Image (cartoon, rainbow over all chains, first blue to last red; front, top):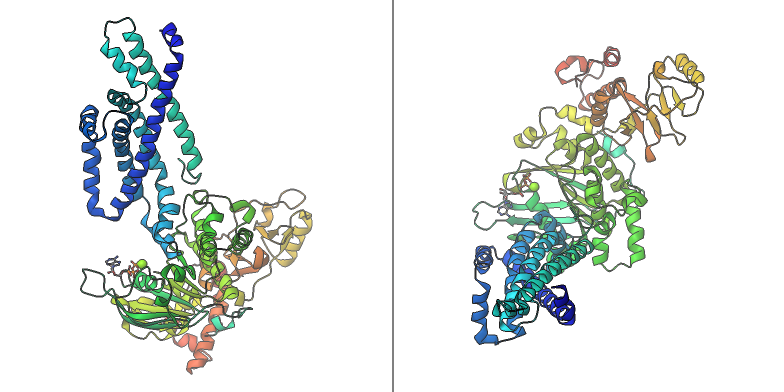
Length: 213
Length: 420
Ligand SMILES: Nc1ncnc2c1ncn2[C@@H]1O[C@H](COP(=O)(O)OP(=O)(O)OP(=O)(O)O)[C@@H](O)[C@H]1O
Ligand SMILES: [Mg+2]
């Protein structure tokens, strides 16, 4: 397998980079969408059960099925992969963002308003920073999950390490079948670990010392 | 009663603004009975108005209508003659300090950040803000270099509450609203905070509206006390002296409570007493000299001071070991000269000496108060009161034994003191 990898080093690295890029982009958009939805949900309590149901049911949709549904809309290619992965990325973050924002002590919010902070300012300076550790743990879950889902998204010619897995599966018994699938899988696991460490670092940098656990 | 009037008037002028409530009513959605029913009230500029009343009577609701955290259903409120609805709500709130129980500090912001919120909102430049933060930390008795960059969870409850007060004062607002500001701290710390608040107020002369559950706190702190009934109906609104001596109705009477003559102890300050001056010793002094001095004065204990005249401990003479005086390492509970006689009795009860060490500005030593000092003062107060009401001044106290203020502790000093 080592020779196999050395021979295709360039391709492996490009695939790995593309995989990471797809996941990071999806988690980034997922975070923005989830936090925006959570802000709306926490303002309109009637929406909360809806949000919970969506994030619970959404995760049970098989990723291949969702990709199949998207195909007629966005066609084969990277866009479909990104949309699908972003969908899954959003769900765990949404749940945590709702919990995090709801967990902010209402008297703190009232103090902020009582001192003359506007509503958006209260959101940015008080509610989000306080909910951030909880949101961040949702982002970590989301990132791990999306590493696997991004591999499946390669089915629609999406970028990333998943392509080798499907190639390997397609030529089961062939000379390089195992090498392809195994090296891609290990690549994904290593990538997941690296990104998790980076996220932890980002978390330390963006979480106030006053609320760090 | 002259207790309050005799305390020193502020050096600077009044910086507060008058608050007026006019026919203010609040009916919460889905409720029939108003939480606040047609209240009208004027709080003069530069005074502290203490709101007391049973739980649920509408104190918090009334307070929050002043900074529009709650909008009245009807009626008008004005500050300094200006209707509070004439300004944008966020702008209005930046001119009103708001302090609530526990301080309500933002845990993700340092002490300095917490304090500088409103100045930042008002667009002060950063050097002015950091100077202001240090000034305020000094004002509330916390060392700026030590505390400025701490986070709230690295502070004790009392310190958090102090920062809460500093934050309320940050942009020098003419009006400060406080909702049970000292409710979450232990009695000794609460007494400290109250004394500090009073000394700050003597300097600043803001208009302060403060909600409390505690009638003693109301009497101690208030220029005026507002006793509220269910629905924020005013039972009485008057000076502490009048509230104590002539409750307006049965409700006020019940609320002030049976011990109202004892509560008058809250009107007098330790600074009005003639303090005892027992033997003192400074750290580093020759111990033999001190022992001789104590013997000459007939004292069995001495007060040890540090080089800056701050009391460190109150050891018995027999506890003085070694050739020089050292810090006895005791946890001495001092009494601020601004404390009330009530506080003084509290502090004395926990002291083994039947007395308490009194300190002035910057914790410097002033003297000692004991039960005899306090009972002498009470008797003088009583004689004065009887003279005023025209009772036989000579031996009035003996004719009305039930009216005499009795103090529980059977300390030997108390016995000898009140035996005349
Ligand atoms: N947001 C609200 N919605 C509905 N009713 C409320 C609301 N806030 C307070 N009330 C009701 O209004 C009344 C007055 O409440 P308020 O908080 O002003 O009392 P309070 O005097 O501050 O009591 P406490 O001493 O317990 O703090 C109470 O009967 C309370 O149940
Ligand atoms: Mg209240």
